[in-house]
Image (tube, rainbow, N blue to C red; front, top):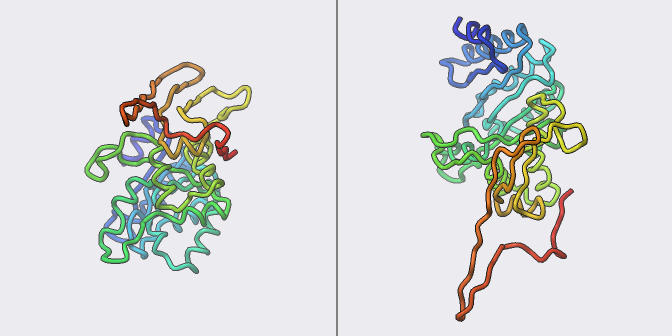
Length: 270
């Protein structure tokens, strides 16, 4: 009843956390209830799903089935799904095909997931993130989220999607040039698609929601977790940062250092 009242008060997205329910059956009911409510009101769905190392936590398959049954393709997002890291490959293959069929969006949260998962392991300790590469290879829209910023689950954040992309580059083993380009998409175009944003991008006629990095290339932006020189929303400056200057003192001399390659050696990913 509280959720119905909240929706009637005006919300954009309906959510749930099925793996926190007392039983598997209760978890399935929570997914079906949330999705039916969203379908009835024409809303989107974002469920914190299977955020555990438990390979028996499989609520994302219920999400996929309900998305298909209710005709909600493109409006449903599953966040975390870290249990997918522990599924056997045969089951994961079938699941990923169903997620693709359902046209679901997926969100991995590298900062929280790398910090919280695998804590019941001895050695080897699982990396504990969802199957990012396999999902991407299947053509599924995968996004990078931040999740917590400063709370008991993750106290070390500062609300920076680029920091999350930097972490995923390492523990997701996405260090190739094409993969680094994908990481940029995962904090820009892909989330915009999951949110259903219109007039998004750099083409004429778009909203001019822009971020200018203090870096010459996408690779350098990720590598340095570069400051944002300008942040624009609808063409108006809403934030700016003046990057600091590092100076090395040695042999009686001072020399500025920017940790960048010479311009002729810049590697552009796009």
